[in-house]
Length: 390
Length: 166
Image (cartoon, rainbow over all chains, first blue to last red; front, side):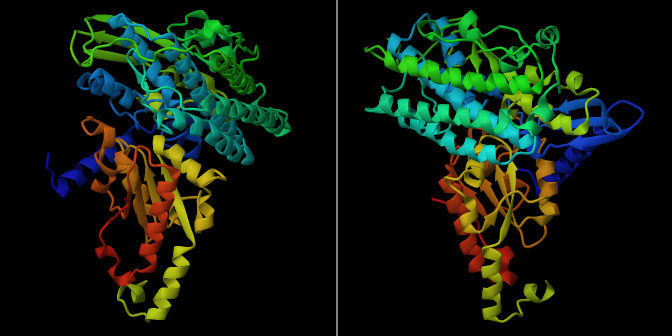
């Protein structure tokens, strides 16, 4: 559609006016503080509008939609193999983990099952993307409470994991590697040994973070007892992932509702923390990174031989039906509800993304805290904007 | 900058000015989506280390910045904000558009909510393709921008064509 420059400018001006209107939160007293949409503490483009009484937050409201890219509509015009390209980019830190639930849902509808080797490699890559995702959180959370060094360490050590993902999939960031009925390629030669040494490095990284951040007095003062979520509230708001386990709820989809991945084959533990504050959420994520290292190490020892693709037709038409598959992504429960009418493209895809539910607790949680705590609480909730707005 | 804009400064002085501008650039990083992480890897990781190019990340505000990296998807809701902060930057200012989304819409070329190309709202000097581009590609884009600044006749700077990294 061709538009003149004046039309474009008028449109932009209207948008700007629209953005100005909804700044005020509906309470009568106090000062309104606007955080974002461009603010380093908001992980991109989240906007928080807070009403303050002195240093205290009276009411806070996250305003989202600055990163809305229309995934659910776009999936209706993409064929099934093309959809993975898009949904890679929902949670951009752990890209591979996004593909898996969608592919599993499509496999459920087509009634095919990936061969064991493909399932194992999927699980390894799933956990590698978990490490790639959470390692950045560990550095980022420290930045939000005032320590700059850990994020440099996080970026440094994250590169090793990205390298390993790149060697298998060819994509450093967005692998687009999962296929209906299996995976695209086999593991390259020597990959298993190399990954073993990378896992060792990531263990060292976790130890480093524990010494550097967890034991730090300032970090503890900024996070202990801040942003406490009781278990019943966490469940009521539909939190998932480490936010839920940080409140002491022992629920992990990998253990309790596992579909299609091989977590039953390995010996691992679900970590919970009873406190429910910002500190406990950090602690749970740190332990989860270690646990992911354990899982990968055990899986690497026992990857079975065999084919990596099941028999699927060249042109994929998914039979009519509905399926919902959720997996425990780095951020929490990521689910795809796929409705098919027997076409090349899905009829409707509903994405249940973890961050959207996790951020919905923010108005409740930010009420009554001090201004600097907004940042540490938001950091500890750990959302990714693509995952909120989709 | 009246003297500079009228093109009245002697050549050696222009060269000196350009050289000092080239190696002391504050970059205003506009992290929007996936590319923001690759930009973070280029700016904050010891492996890529942008500071060796004479580029300083994390200015306090856009009013301090010399160039802007738009990294990621610009949505229609975000577009006025991008325009507004670009307007706040002091002249001379440059824009690097990083990633397919900022260049042309990328994988969201048919989305109803994505601005197909940030060049619709602000002038872009360097386009870095990729989805997302590797940090090396962004560094290459920065080097090309520096070359452009070096060879710039400051009076003529608005007439230049955008650079495309290949």
